[in-house]
Length: 254
Image (tube, rainbow, N blue to C red; front, side, top):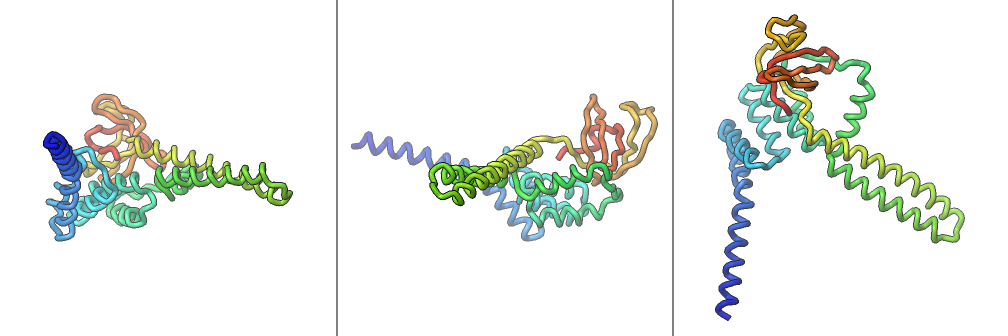
């Protein structure tokens, strides 16, 4: 009995240690939220940064950190964190609204290339739900489609069989579409092919060389797509199609 009690005590102690270790990062997150609520923005940023450095990610943490930087007047870092929050939770209306506000503070107002209209529409449609949201819809549509197929195969009523057949085809198509959107959101979530310009004013060059032709100037807060990197240089592309090279240190990947 004594040995059994000791074993149970050991398991109980290990469970407490594991729970304390697992909850520790969220204590830091709660501290950040408290500091943010009290207007201590620099302290809140420090807490959120430590939370993320520990290997955890939270749309709310990035969103609050973006709000902190916005109130401190650092709009480039505000945009960067809003964009990271949007990757984790693309349908969050508050994140989208604050990101738009922060973008109004930037110098560059880059209009998307008209040839990318369909691509932009598709991405906006995909942002209606996160990867998990589209995944849940995929499974739901699949189950409904299978139920329709079962009804088609087992019913002796002609009308029910027709409804079951076409309903099964329709919901299985919806399931495939949801799967494609979930996969796209997963790729976006795990890719780092977009970045925010973090330096005040950058002259983009025609090649990865200090003496290369100067093409155009962009400013902090601008969002760019990363084409490729070579050493200290990165080739970037803007939404309007302009493309060129800048120092990798001048941007931070989303």
